[in-house]
Image (cartoon, rainbow, N blue to C red):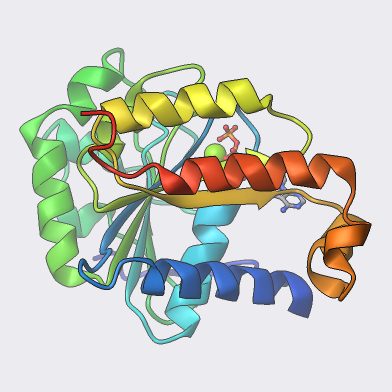
Length: 249
Ligand SMILES: Nc1ncnc2c1ncn2[C@@H]1O[C@H](COP(=O)(O)OP(=O)(O)OP(=O)(O)O)[C@@H](O)[C@H]1O
Ligand SMILES: [Mg+2]
């Protein structure tokens, strides 16, 4: 592993940090029969918050004493400095192409227990790479080392990568940007994941405003006071949650 320990900018306010802690707890307790070690995070559209959710969730887990690896598998947009000020140019694609060993692509951070792998160099054949034995080997190897491996993927509304990855991990989380994605598209994405035999753990409703958040969690008069659209999104999340692996078989 690289000797450098990268500094992570982590200055969430208490409410936001608590939201990630709740997400962590929900994942830890969602399937008692099967431990969720490898986790894919996806969304329908770009920019809904997959990476933000993956990283903050990973940090929340690390702060709770877990050993966590974040893997940037959005290899169509290879930007090694996207989220971390990493000087290590070797990442996931370099490993898959046999240009680097596992210990050369794992980076440490100043947050104890939180390591990351960047996406690596750009390639012309992303699907070939994530369907390769080297990629499944990597997943197999890192799950022996870490309590949780969080795999950040490209948006499923644009490319198939997330479904391929979701099929190889223990659980998948869907990030939905409130008021930005049509219910129909979110459900279409869910069907695609179910067809790929993904184990959908649930959805994260992201980027809700402070007042909406308060409306959702802060009021005892919740059922009377929530706005109309919240009903729609709650229903969507219920639909996403109720469908598990195999229900489409
Ligand atoms: N809960 C949130 N509240 C406010 N801003 C957010 C939230 N989540 C993400 N963002 C912001 O939205 C933008 C996109 O987030 P992010 O990069 O995590 O999305 P993404 O789904 O990974 O995007 P891409 O598909 O391009 O990889 C960033 O500027 C990020 O800071
Ligand atoms: Mg991203």
